[in-house]
Length: 111
Length: 115
Image (cartoon, rainbow over all chains, first blue to last red; front, side):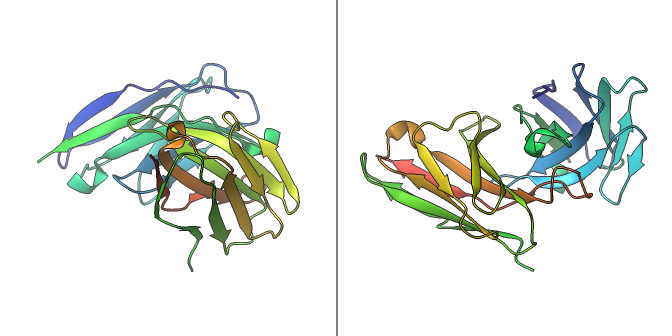
C-alpha cells in the first residue's frame, strides 16, 4: 500500500485557517486521497476525499497538487472542536480498498 | 441509523483467556475491517473482509481470527489473549473499493486490557 507522510503536530489559533499538509509521492493513478479525523476516545471520522480536483464540503476543503504527490486539508476557521488527530490516507479502488494509516497530525487549537 | 456498532466497549482479560469482539453494520456495506490502535499511534489493519464468507489477513494478523458469516457482522476472536494485545480495537465498514463518497465508517471502539 502506498504510504503518506504528515507532520506529527501543528498548532492553530481559534477562528484562523489551518492548512494540514500530506505527502504521498508514491500515489498511483487509482488511489483516492481521503482525510479522516479522530477526536479523543472516538473512532476516526470521515472528513473529505478527492481524486484529482480540489474538493469542498461543509467540514473542509481539500487541495490536491497537480502531480497528485501532495495534498492539503484546509479548515477555514478552526474551532476548539477541531482539535483532533488528522489522518491522510490513500484508498485504492483495487486491493480490497485497504488503506495504511500513519500516525497522523495532532492539531492543537488555541483559544 | 446506528452505523457501525461494536460490542463490548470495554473488557479486561487475563492472559490466556479468549474472547470475541462483535462488529455490526446496518449500511449494507460489502467491506469490513478490524484495526487496532496502540497509545499515541495510528491504526494498523488486523484482518478484513470483502464480502460474506470471505476474510483476509492485514498487517498484524497474528494471534487473531475473524469470521464473517453474515454480511452485516464481522467477528474478531482472540484465542489466547496476551498483554501485547492490550489496545483499542476499531471496526470499520465501507461500500466496495470503488469509492462511493464516504469512505470508511468506523465504530466507536473496544478498549481491551489484558493483564
